[in-house]
Image (cartoon, rainbow, N blue to C red):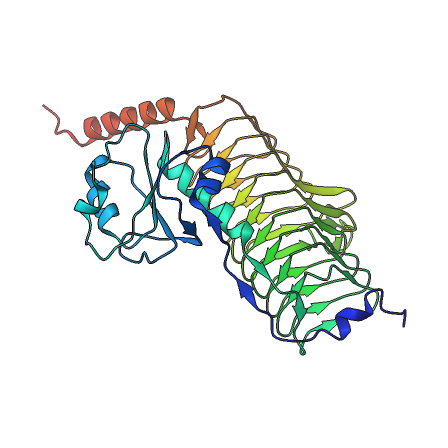
Length: 365
C-alpha cells in the first residue's frame, strides 16, 4: 500500500461544520450588476416573501408585488430598474422590521439566480472526513474537501478545494474532480472520468459507465461486447440531475462542455459530444456518437438515434424523435414530432390529417 499523500486528512475525521455564505448588499449588487439603494445590510440566503427572515434576499418582477416584498422580513429586495420605492419604505412595512436594501436591475429573476449562486459560493465547509468514509492512501484531497458518511474514494483520485462528496458516493480509481463541486449523495463515478469546476451532481447519478455497444456474431447469433475503454470529460458549471447516466467513450471520449444542464433521468450514450450551455429535460435518451452543438434545448422524453447532429440553437419540443444519422439545423427554430420537423410544418400536417379524417367520416350525399 502506498503512503498517504495527505497524512493530515487521516487525522481529521470529524463532523463537518457548514457556514452560510455572507456578503453585504452593496458587495452583492456589484457582483450581479445591480444598482444599490438604501441601507447596506448583511445577506446570507435567498427566500420567498413568506419564508424570508433577517439576512434574506427576495425579488420582485412586477411593481404590484413591491408592497409585499417590503412588508416581508427580508433584509433586501431585488426590484425592476424603473420601480418607484415609497419615499418612506418603512411606511409600507411593520414598524418592527429593520430598513431594507434595494438592488435595481433590468432582469430581477436572473439577478436573483445570480445572487443565489454568489451566496452559495461564499458558503463553505470546515474540511473534514467522516469516520465511516473509506479513502485510499494514494488519493489526493485538498484539505478543504468534505467527505460524508460511507463515501468510498479509490486509488489515485484527485479532488480540488471546497468540493463536497456526499454520503454513499463511490469514486473509482483515477477520477479527477475540480474545485467547488458537489456530489449530493450515492453518486457513482467510474475510472477515466474528469469533472472540472463548480459541477453539481444530484443523487443517484452514474458517470462514466460502459456504453451500450455490442458486435453480433452471424455464426452463433450471439452478441459480444465492444470495448468500452474511453473517457468521460465534464466541463465547468455543469449540473447533472438525479439518476442521470452518462457513458464514457468506447475508445475515445464522451464530452460534456461548460454550462450544460441535464435534468433527472437523462441517458447520454458513449462518444456523445454535448456543446456549451445545452439544456436537456427529463427522460431524454441520446444514442452513441451523437453531437449536440452549443445552445441546443431538448424537451422531455426526446429520443435521439445514433450519429445524430443537432446544430447550434435548435429547440426540440417534448416527445420528439430524431432518426439515426439525421442532421437538424435551424437556430431558434422549434422542432416537433417524430421524425422531428419544424413546428409550422408539423402543425400543417396535423391540420391536413384532421381535414382528411373529417371528410372520411362525413356521410355520403
